[in-house]
Amino acid sequence: MKTISKTKISIGRHVEEIDCTGKFIVPGLFDAHIHLAAIDLSDVDRARGATDKILDNMLRHGITTVRDMGGNAPYLAQYKEDII
Image 1 (cartoon, rainbow, N blue to C red):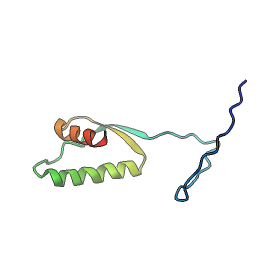
Image 2: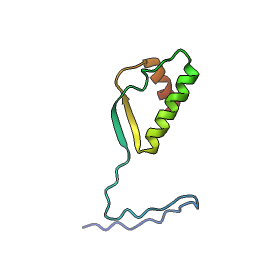
Image 3: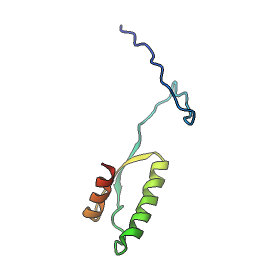
Image 4: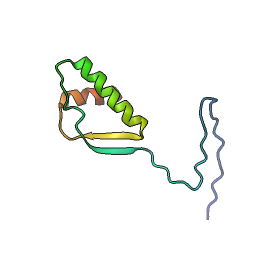
């Protein structure tokens, strides 16, 4: 049996350390069926604002990955480009 030594990690003063001993942790939730890009795109800036609010809300609730089930592909491609 191999023993792994604990590594000290420096945590900044604005970081809250949470003891998760004995808990199950997931890196993020996956919403595999959304229709994010099926909105009115006649005003792209307004649409981006609305989409940003939706994505921000999802992220705040633990959803880190989404799969759009049908919408404007170029609109979604721009979001993908912005992330990369």
